[in-house]
Image (cartoon, rainbow, N blue to C red; front, side):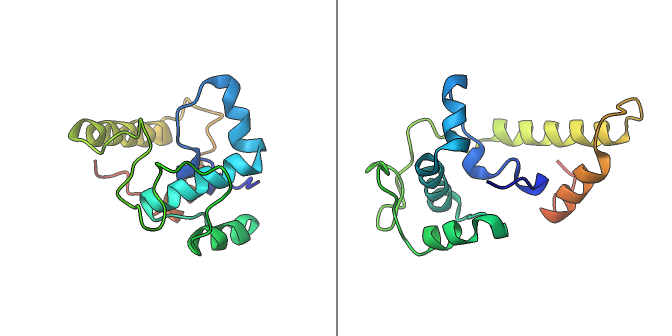
Length: 134
């Protein structure tokens, strides 16, 4: 488990699940491995954190975990997408720009006394996210 703010929204965690199932994505290693593998083949990304280095190396090596769906992307079938994966559309791009504006406003809003501004800025810097543009 990674308890580093830079990875709280890892791509493998960015899925919609019914609330009773969310605990599985954090607690069951097989489920985590499946989502990490799918994230790698969808986006070319594997978590670089030292706590999950071994898992990331397995994913990058082409290892497919037991129970991985046959209709999800993997070596030799990169064109597959799991059912329900949202396409990158102009509407989604607009929502991203809106959220960046909201985060920028929150960082500047002195009334939000509990916002960990320094942590947020460090995470944005780590991921090279520029809030000045949409």
